[in-house]
Image (tube, rainbow, N blue to C red; front, side):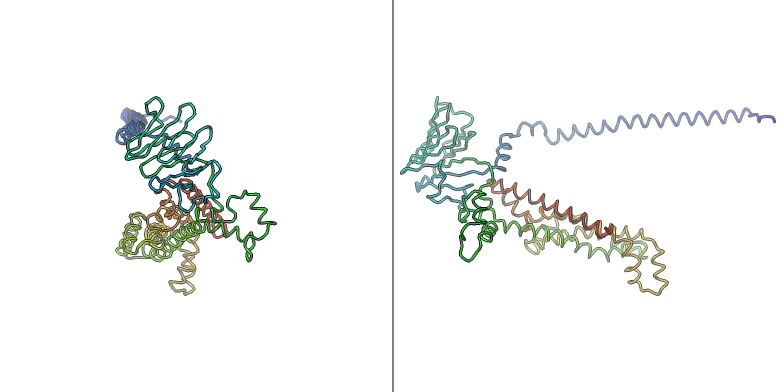
Length: 452
C-alpha cells in the first residue's frame, strides 16, 4: 500500500499552523510570566501606598506601650483607692473608688493606719505614703522622700531638685507612678492607688455577711454552719448574695445576656419568616412576571445593602432605644439576605416531586408545602442557624447603640476607663455566649438536618 504524499501547498499550510500554534503558545507564556510578576508588584505597591496613607511610621512613634501595659494590668487586677478630701479633711478607702465599695472604719485593710490627722499607707517593698494634713509624703526606696503640699498650687519637693520621668508635675496636679502604686494630688483631692491581683468582691460585696471570708470559710458556713438568717438556708443566702452583688451585678448581667440572645433570635427567625414568602415572588420558576421578580429582588438588595447598624440608628430615633429596636434592625437586614438565599434555593428545586403532587389534584399551597418545602428545608435551616450565630455577635454591638443587652454594659464599662476588669468579664461572657450558640447550632443541625 502506497503512503499518501503531501503537496507543497499542504506542507506550507501545515507549517503555518505549527508556526501560529508556536507563536500563540509563546504569547500565552509571556502573558502568564508578566502576570506572575505584575500581581506581586501590584500587591507590593498597594502595601506601600497603605503604609504611607495610614502613616504607619507616625503610628509607631505615637504608640504608648506603657499605656497598653497599664491597660492589660487593669484587666486582671483591682485597685484600692485611699482618697483624702483636702477640703473636708476626711479619708475614704474604697475598691476602684466606687461609693458602693467603701470600707467601713472597722474593716479598713491593715496596710492602712490612721492616727488622728495622720494616715500611713504601706504600698509594700518599702514604699510608704503618708497623709499629714495638706502635706503628702511618698517615701520611695533608693530615691528618697517626695513631698507635696496642697495650697493654691501644688508645691513639689523632690530629692536633688530635678523632677524624674516617673513624676508628672504641674502647679495644679502632681502624679507619681511607681511599680507599687500611684499617688495623685490636686487642690481638692489626694489619692493613693494600690494594685492587687484578681477581681475583688466578685462573689460577695461589702454588705454581704459572707464578705471577707475565704472560700473554705464560705463553704463551711454553707455546709455545716449556723444559719445567718433565721428563715433562709445558708446556701440560698449565698446564692442570693452572689446574684444581687451590688458591685458586679450578676443578675443584671445575666438579664443583659438574655436580652442579647433574644435580640439575635427574634431578628434572625423574624427575618426568615418574612423572607420565605417573598422569596417565592423572587424565584423565576414560581413567579412568571418579570417585573414583579425585579421589584422584589430590588427590595432585597436595598434592605441587605444597608448595614444593621444604620438601621439601628434610624429605628432608635423612631422607636426609642431598647432590645426590640435592635431585633428590628437585624430583621430588616437579614430579610434581604435571606430573600436572596431562599430564592436561589427555590430556583434549584427538582420539579418532579411537584408534578407528582400536582397530579393528585393538590392546590398550589399544598404543592409548595409538600413538594417544595421538604427539598429546601435543610438549606434554609442551615442558613438560619448560621445567621443566628453571626447575629449573636452583632447583637452585642447593636445593643451598645440601642441601649440593651451586654453591649450596653460593655460600653459603659469602657467609658468609665476605670473598671477594666469588668470589661474583661463582659468580653469573656460574650465569648462564652458565642461558643454556646455555636454548640447549640451544631446540635440543631445534627438533629434537624442530618436526622441524627
